[in-house]
Every structure is written in C-alpha cells, then in structure tokens.
Image (cartoon, rainbow, N blue to C red; front, side, top):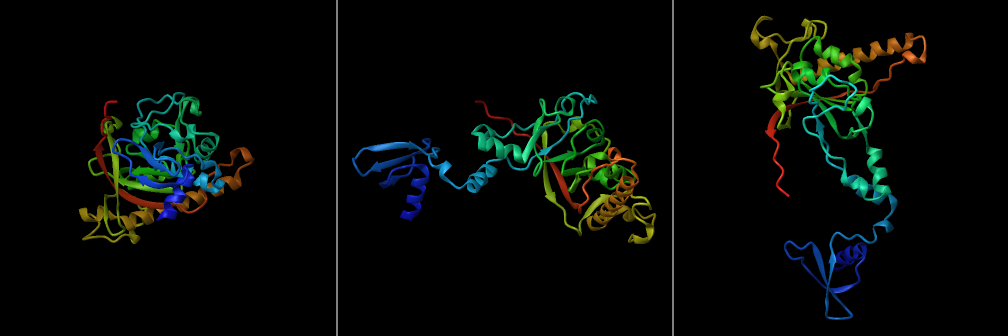
Length: 303
C-alpha cells in the first residue's frame, strides 16, 4: 500500500510524506505532513505535475479517455436550406479537453471533426466523433430535409427499415455510403410520417433487441423478401404473418445491402471516368435492433 501511495505522490509531483490525510468534504485537496517540519501543506488534487514525463502512448490514452462518451444526434429538420448549419434536437458542446494543450487538441481532432455547418463546411458546425457518435433518423423529414456527411453509425426508424421500398431506397442513397453499423430503432408510438417537433425536449434511451424477439409489422414486398422464404402463419392473409422477428428482418436488410454493393460495383466498373466513381463502404455491415424509449431531458441546475 505504501508503494501505491508513493507512486501516486510521484505522479502528482509531491514530496515524500509520513502521513496522508483524507480530503475534507467540499475541499478537493490533499493534506500532506512534511518530514522536515510539523506544518501541514495543502496541494490541489487536480495538479498533475509529471504528466509530461509519462510515455506518449499513455498520455494519448489518457486524452482519449477524456473524450465524451458516444452521442446520438437527431436532426431537427426545421428547414430545407442546405446552405445553413444543420440543427439538432440536442446539440452537444465540443470536448473541453481539446483546449488543454496542443497534444490534447491533436488527439481530439484525430477522433472527430467539425461538420454540418454553413455550406456543408465546418463553420459553425458540430464536433462529431466519427468513431463513436451516431445519427438517428426517427422520421422521414429528418432524413429528407438534412444533408449530413455520411456517418459510420446510423440509427434508422423501424418504420422505414421494415418497409419496401423505403428501406431499399435509403440503403441505396448516398447517405448510406459509409455506414458500417446500422441500428434499427423500434419506437412503437412513433411513425415514419410524424413531425420531428414531437421529439423536442426528450432524448432516446435504447434497449437491445434479441434475434428471437419480434420487431413489429413489416411491409416488405416479394423483391426484398420472397414469399418462399417466409414462415407464413395460418395463411398469407393472417395478421400474424405481417409480424416479423428480428432474425428474419436482419437477414432481409443484409440481403438488400449485398445487392446494393453489387449494383454500385457494376456502376463503378462501367463508369467512363474517375469522376463518376462513387466511393462507398465495401466491407460487412453490422446490423442490430434496439427498442427506443423517450425520456425528458433534465433541466440544467442554476449556476
């Protein structure tokens, strides 16, 4: 235990001590009794004098841990003006750690960037972590009224993902070109036709759906889900036949994604020049489903 305290004191840049007292409530400090005298010296607990002496990879790891947790951005869709910044129902501030020093700024900007600003540039845009953040399209107007740079993770309403030709059209659109992870969001009270204003003042909370669980009614046609592949319950006209489990829905979506890659590959091969080549994610698609709950956004406490 003494070795642990000794290592911690070395990292904090404190001299050796023969007594360490617990900080008092409301006082973020360390009380140290020095060897040379009986006086008590108070040192701020947030001081990290020897941080620069740590190996670069450890410092970089610490800065990465200081980044915000994964965040979900929901477009407000209040305007169709593509020249103005995209507005979101909840806008998150950029990471505060980027202002600590040049090294912290470099780590911050290596994980994310400012985007969706004026004229589709970084000006007045949001800071978006391209590795962990996601865009959530809960209704159609959020998808059609916003121009967002192709994210790697997309939450898509089940009202779109389980319907033909909506799902097929969305997966073929440029919005999906760099998507590596698609999360189908099942929100029973919601609808693809609802107004995004209904979502204001709330934030989504997710529960993962298992393969054997149902995800609701589907409207897949024979193109996306051939009749011979379905498990029909009491005849095709039975209402139960329109309820689809997540395991089947996932297979349908992945089949559409594979057809998408084949079509884009053929288009690029037949293109007359490099100008017509369309870049897109050529790897596998990670697909999962979640149940969505809307909870009120807590109001900030007065300063």
